[in-house]
Length: 391
Image (cartoon, rainbow, N blue to C red; front, side, top):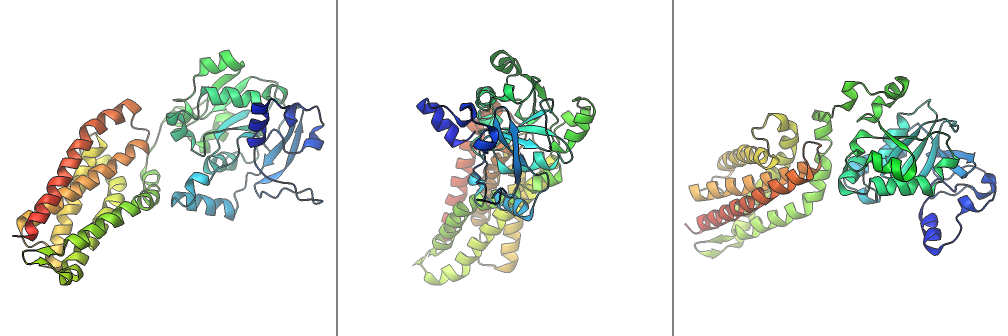
């Protein structure tokens, strides 16, 4: 159920699912997506909804298992942080295939990419998909933030009147959501048993064929090159505003010198520093996920230091070759490397929230140590670089 259900619950009004009307009369009630039936056509306006399944608890939208160009384009845009926080569906109950009361119930988040990944791996299967309100966040991240959790799961089971739709008491919860869901609490409060599914939706068919038994490989979290590289676009776009501000600051400050402020230096050293910083940041964003497993150190901030040394040193060498006046003294070179190291180390902290390697307490502990050092390193770098402008 979506916003209408929530509103009705707050106002004490009877929801359409409990109104006693026939499913064919109430339409898409116990599902959550905001779609409308085309007047007179009987076809859904939302492309990934292919009809309505009538149940004792109301009509349930049936989703397709084939991803369209629109689905893939939406996922690509979300990867580039374009409308990322609005790429969501309404929570509720959905159907896939021709489910019966005996069909399994899969739990997911209302992040559209999460739902797309799940439904595309249920091709040829019959089942129900219970979508939780995770505020548009994917399963794993929402579990860490508490929105994919016990309270929401129990509430959603009751809100869609799942006991009237299925005759069993099993809920298949993705393993990456396990940190937010207490199985025994769900059992006590709703009567439903939580069965943790595989880490990846691609393994669901084999999991189901094995009688909902996960092979050891299905429980293993992998973070391979592809998993890491797909994170690059969103990291670049989300940090772009701050990167441009810093690059502009280097452009302007490069005009300072022993003879005061020179507009001419903006077009020479200023442009050079701005371009070098932008290039260094992009290089850090690419090299860090690509080389992550092989970088020394366990902490992400430490791994970032190595990338900063590589990129900072390379940019100094490149600047020396391309423009001899950019790094004309050792304080400027050392200051630049220190600043790039601080930026790379700070950027690496983003991976504490993009991998399954860390825990919340571990992230907090690392940040307490790393942030002061990164700030000191950046300040020392800028100070040395500025001093070099007047030597």
